[in-house]
Image (cartoon, rainbow, N blue to C red; front, side):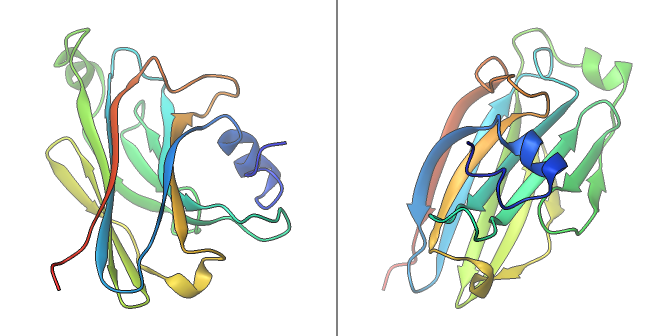
Length: 175
């Protein structure tokens, strides 16, 4: 059983169960920035894909928390898929948008979370555009670790064909 499916709604849990995990990093007590980025290949990407940093509890009866984005490439929409915040932004799409990419071109997708005390302040970058994601408190996390995940909405579709160069890192200010 996927660690996602037991704590989320059946629809959301079913979508998240097929995601690929790219690592886990524990958040430090002080200030820090956690970044997860991938290059997606629009010519190979599904119409909808997931991307996020999730807190996956060890026990299945605890809820999953964190930040999950559902990117709808066919409609040009960016949705919060985890916290009920709804539509986060839109971007230009359609044949002209799709045709600007050669078969081998990639598009940067980057989620950066800045931790200031108990507050997690995320921003999302899609190509050259930046989108704000509502903040959360670390009190919503059951552990201090976040796991980087990405994949397709379609069950069983692996992220491998369209997610390239995944990178996941933590930076802390010098003391």
